[in-house]
Image 1 (spheres, rainbow, N blue to C red):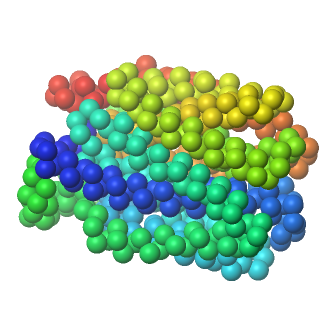
Image 2: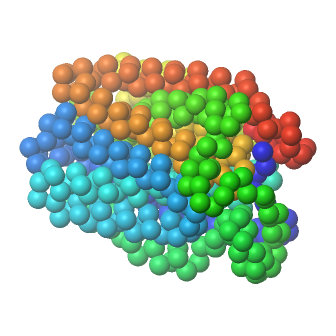
Length: 443
């Protein structure tokens, strides 16, 4: 299957830079909003805010990921129908306003509603942004561009730790959520400057608009593809993912994403609290969040380059194996320096392992079906994201925190198996595509 068109001139790189830059900022705010709950959670538990206990805190963490499940499942289909730009702007506005609701909450019900609504926006933004940058990625560089985009998510995680560190103790936890409302100011910027996907414009018959955009930045207009289904068939793009032998690939991606997101969001929600349970002060526990996300940034860049050379599914499988080892080691009491190194390396492998699943799906998908493929892979994985925070809360509530690391490590092993199986298979349509498509499908 082919990747989307790539810039073919020096001037064309301006378009890729513009798209990646704007999407990077949007995903930065996504990461800030996602990680802020885990960063303030130790304070909420320590002060008994809303009468929180570890198991109820785990439930609250799952509310956001449940919202992300809804957002991710809906995003691909909606983006393929109305456009990725409009959806991205809507998602940024939604999770920003929802954070304001959390800041104003006077009880668990309102706070939980805010986190759920924020999750819908967060879940819809990420797969849409990945699809958008994939449209403009240079040929053979799809994985590294997606990896670069995902560094923003971890930069947002680092920012959340500092927001919590600087504001929670002196001002209160509500101030941290008010900071998460500020991305609302970015929505008009996104609406003004982010171009629409060229492949989307062509697929919708808006060829003059696509030509004008392409002429402005001196890039090629993608060739129109014949429609696979009538416009009235709402689920046509989803059905395409199960045609022929593609259903096995689709299920392998979904299962790998389930384990990967269980691991990602379980650790993201509970890492500061688990480290507090190990005897570290709040400041030190938040430092682990910073180190973990610094590792995530490094991992995205390393994994992206490695995936472009050796194949995204192969790199993802190796990374999940290394992640499982690192997460398991966190259950062992070690000197502070060694623990920091393990947390950093775990961040390197954990976050990029899941992203390489998205890279695999994105690169192997047709442009007119890419948002649906990535969105549903992310969406089905969100079941794991919902389960991870809940599982961590249940284990902590029963004083079995160490088993949390073991459970998360086993999730990493399962994702290694599923994406590894996908790596051994060649997409059945690859043989029918041209040489460039076969080269990209190998990734």
